[in-house]
Length: 208
Image (cartoon, rainbow, N blue to C red; front, side):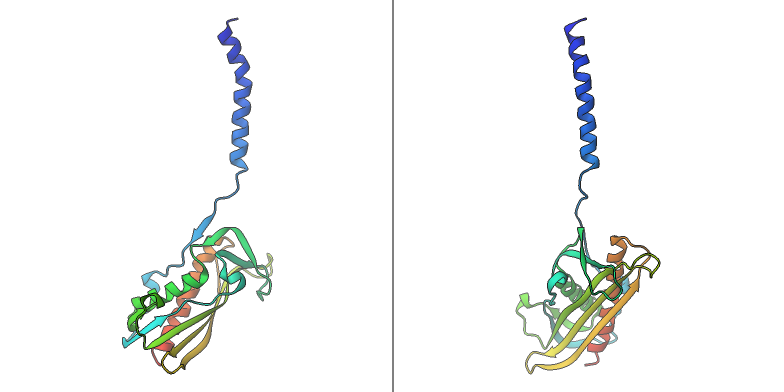
């Protein structure tokens, strides 16, 4: 038997073992992190009947504890008293920034005000919007108890920064059933919940 053939016979088992180990490594690799946006499509933005000539500034939203993290939160209880976080599913930004940016985009697209600005622009604003995140989670009750849902609750304030006069202060809550228990479906549900809340809030503040 030639030397080349002997070497090939010796290498074959090693090559097979290497391929098997490689396949196992790929199979046992941890899931890849996934990041989600919260962009509201134009079709879900309700146009304002009249444009307010004033300038409104949207400040950063306040989100404490778990709600301040980028990891998507979920609860297995309908009362939402116990929160957990998904390991590989994250918002693109923290909820405070995502919600503030969507508020800005929504009000601009709706034509509710002549100008909608953020603090970074250092512009003089006639009105100021502040927000606080109370709930933003995927609700996953035990099978058979009730179906999956999403819950979003925001405390939103409209005030006059010159006089500190509070023109609107209200809590807006939406709990929406979703089709399945997956995270992508939950993030779409939360986007729809946010669109509903912003439509309600825009209607309230344009009356002020």
